[in-house]
Image (cartoon, one colour):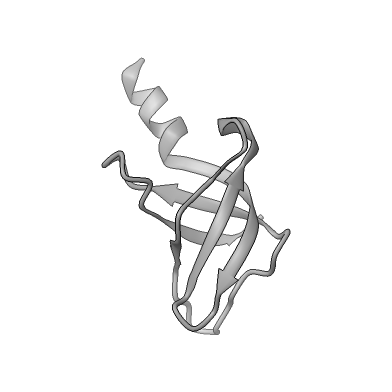
Length: 76
């Protein structure tokens, strides 16, 4: 069952709180995690440039290192 818990912590859906387009990062609020706001998450680069907007719902992949590092994959 630990594998399922790890997967639930790694794949998250949240709402964009702020964006730094120059650095290609965003901060995301996760309601299901008590409303915590992430640190700067890297926005995955694409063939066609995309940067989320504040209040967009996004899919994130978090690294299991416990430091809150992760990536914004795309809009949901």
